[in-house]
Image (cartoon, rainbow, N blue to C red; front, side, top):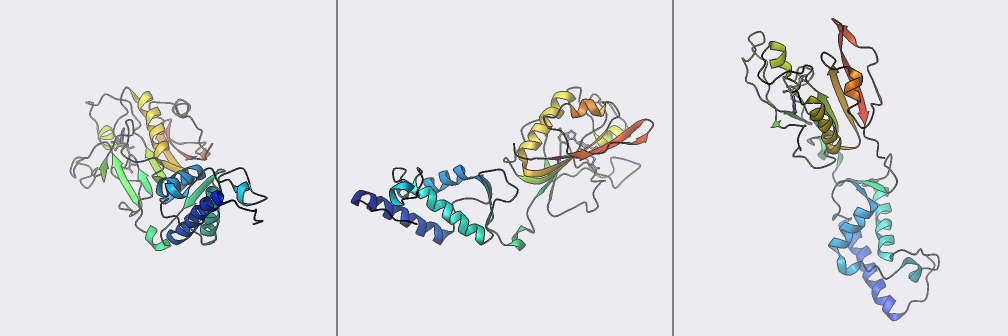
Length: 274
Ligand SMILES: C[S@@+](CC[C@H](N)C(=O)[O-])C[C@H]1O[C@@H](n2cnc3c(N)ncnc32)[C@H](O)[C@@H]1O
């Protein structure tokens, strides 16, 4: 850094900024929680933690002849980010401009992280491991063993009861992956049949419900997270279903596995930041 002559007032401000660097080096920016953050959010968190050390009136160009027209303390925060990057604690890879991913834990501490949401777990029939340790199983209902006489072991036992057509109780950007396997049949809730019991029903308000569901699941998905949408076109055409979503899948089933003219589709959506 090419130093500039500093006047007494600037010197006091610069000492504050130096102290900020020292504190941030010591705590390793722990005031920023783990996750993906825009740099402006990181500045806000640092300023909220050390308000007296973040003086916006001391600019980079006041202390360095090649400095920018930006507060010097922000420059120091970026230096710390670079140091964290070298230690593998902060990464920018694959993120949109201005974003950083911060991680404080060692690799083995991610082992028990809930990273996956099954938003329609039902009887977990599609799961190879029905109690996957990194998965949270959700459904709008629960049903005990013995509900289906043909399959006495079948049950719906979600970890949480939740309804994606309404606001879910998870913060934004909670999950890396979401499985969304919605019911296939539109029916009144009191209609009965084995298929309706096993796979649930789309209510007559399905159009609004499914559109809200996508929006809500997209909200709780992390940037670059993936959502797999599984769907059988028994009552609603696949083109109609996909038209409810504000983004299109990246790829998926082009030709269905048809039974009596109906088939199952799988589509993969990736939450690429705009
Ligand atoms: C096709 S089944 C899922 C089957 C499941 N994937 C399996 O492996 O067995 C659809 C499930 O979505 C659930 N469901 C329907 N509407 C829902 C909603 N609004 N929120 C959460 N779950 C819902 C139903 O209760 C039903 O268990």
